Image (cartoon, rainbow, N blue to C red; front, side, top):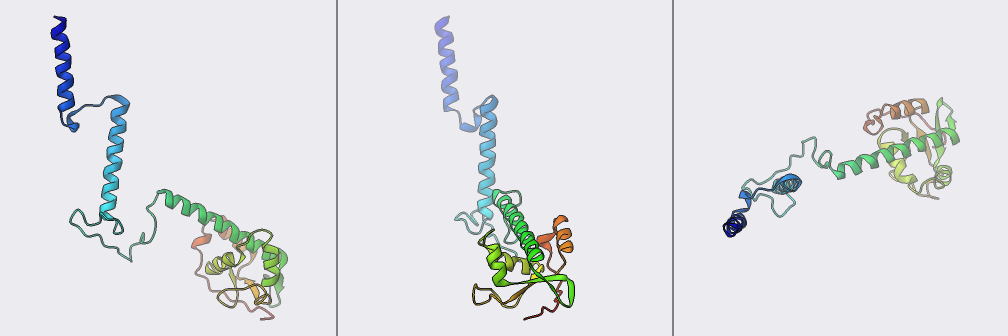
Length: 199
């Protein structure tokens, strides 16, 4: 009787091993992990078939096309690690732009025609800001792109452009309120241009 039971268990084990992999039953946590892995693998394959830059693009018979008018064109997949890193970088840039405006407000001079607006010469700003960060020119360009500051020329260079005035386009109170609203890096539609003396 014991021999029959043993051969029955062996037969069941052999049937299990020779059964197709999708017929095998995994139990408990292992089964959940296998199902999760298979789901991630299928999602990855589907994503690669839609990605025009992968070697698998168009493997399902559909050639992917990019729509340049799509709102998500050129942006990472929402919620991905790349998207999270980008959001973190944008927050850091916003913080540096606000810090730059605070420095101009504290160390700059009032515009003669408008006491609420301030300006500072590039050479002076460069000397002050390099003690804080070495990215003063890049932050100035970003601040101009979002209409917080304005200056002549495309890029400013140390020594050559030391006398170029950098104007704060808005008052520091307006700039602070824009940053508090969380809308600072979407800002950029205002095209105010106050005259700066000494240009």
